[in-house]
Length: 206
Image (cartoon, rainbow, N blue to C red):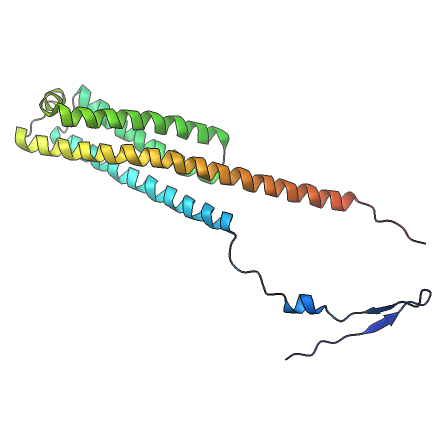
C-alpha cells in the first residue's frame, strides 16, 4: 500500500476547513483501457474494406493478364475488356483514398465508379459463360479454342468475384461514411462544449 499525504487548510474568514486528501473514488477508479464498441466496429469495417479492395486489385490484374494471354495485342472487344479492369483498379485505389481523406467528392466518385464497374463486370461474366464461342470470336484469340475457352471462363469467374466484391465494398463504404459522420458530430460537440466553457464567466461571491 502507498500512503497518501493529506493536508488540512482553514479559511481565515469563513472558518471552513479544506482537505487535500485525494478522494477514495478517484483512487479506486480503474483505468479505462481499450476502445469503445463504435471505434472497434469502425476499425474492423475499415480493415475489411481495405482487404476487399486489395482482392479487387489482384482479381482485376489477373483478368488483364488472362485477356492479354488470349491475344497480346487485343482487339476492340479485348481492349474494352482491359479498359474495364483498369477502371476497376482505379476505383479500388480511389476507394482507399476516399476513406482515408474523408472527402465528399472522393466518396461520391468512388460510389459512381464502383456501381458502374459492378454492372459491367456482371454483364461481362454473363456473356462469357453463355456465349463463350462468340466472345472468343470477338476477342480474335490466336490460342487453341479449347484452351482459350478455359482461359476465358477463368476470366469470367474472376468477373463474378469482382461483381460480388464491389457490392460488398459499396456496403462497407456506406458504413464507414456513417461512422465518420457520427465521430464528426461527437468531435464538433466536444469542441463547442470547450468553447462554451472558456467563454463562461464563473459567479463572483462576496
